[in-house]
Length: 537
Image 1 (cartoon, rainbow, N blue to C red):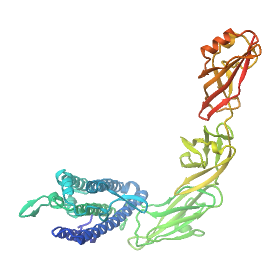
Image 2 (cartoon, rainbow, N blue to C red; image 1 turned 180 degrees about the horizontal axis):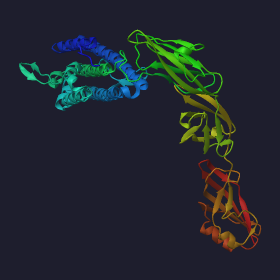
Image 3 (cartoon, rainbow, N blue to C red; image 1 turned 180 degrees about the vertical axis):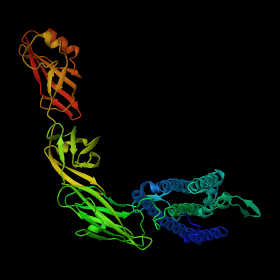
Image 4 (tube, rainbow, N blue to C red; image 1 turned 90 degrees about the horizontal axis):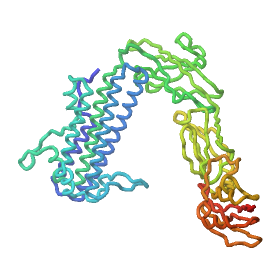
């Protein structure tokens, strides 16, 4: 049902009174006392706005509760409330941004540090409180006051569409935010934007913008009350009234408590319902309350809290007793089920049961809940999520020879539960093995075979299953001909230089070719590998 009228609220009266004080002060010289008065008015406006915002937030929660219980019956009012919230939040954000930009234009910044955090300046923090040239230029000359006026008119038009046509004219007056008014200044008629922002000091302009935020919140409250009035619970004018249990979570860990809200679709906050429930039951009626547990309500709401010990699926049924409009008791049944879990988790390294320092170690995490509800920590390590319980863990070289303990937790409802932990050993990535070409390392080899494999490669052993690639940066070739060392030949990269190939080509049978000072690198770091040799036959 709709309200018959929309009287001015105490908060509206207070805001209007403060605005009268504010406009009166504008006619005086801007002394320090007047500037301080703006600080007091602005602080009071902020406090009043916060109170209104909290009340509006409670009203939106009320709509959510009604939709949860009554479903499609209140869907239209609920959807309109969500549109109202979207429009109001956007309008407040628009004014806040304009206020920040105004302060930035005046002071060169719009933030101030308080309690270790950077926050938007209040009027008390504005340095040039008495400056009126910059605010006038920003709001009037640059057209921001006109833009604000148009935006407010659009906001009012949008929220009025949420009401019935026959109620819109009445609500338009109750919403306030009258930006079409004209004023007399120096015997001339001036617009709303000129009256409020033309040659007005920065302290007053910032205060006025905060006042407008409060007016938006008040307009939002007026519309919320209108939408709430369209839902009547006093006379049970619903086609169906049911009881519902709304659990915080239907998965509970052993040792924790199962919690839920028990409400009825049409409830009166001044009348406390009586509730009974019985574990293991599929249904419960007023005739079968023997052995059931009774719960007392408060402010029309009953809290259900069931301790848990065993595991597995649990179920319960209950009944809600309320007094109807005719004074007769009415009963509404409800039922629900939940699952009790034992804290547990599995952490497994995808490749091996150790973590190698310096490289990405793939790790899988699983538990008794969905992967997106799990979190894992590896203290001192870099952890990158790969999605669906998959992570890459990079351990710093400083932890080689030590252990790292990984801990898995799960978010269930509003709480986080530790599921378990596993300790991993941290090892250094073993050195790769240097070979010539397709795998030549040692033995007697023909010149043609050596020259046909002119690349040095660094490969990991077969028991190292990570896909780790090594690059050969440089090496040296040393020929020993008839027991005499030839000058070493430096080669860059992994290929034999032309000089090294020529020397091998000219070497007589029996020459030993040493490959030394082999320098390689990978994501695991840089290494110098052991030398190896072949004998020319």
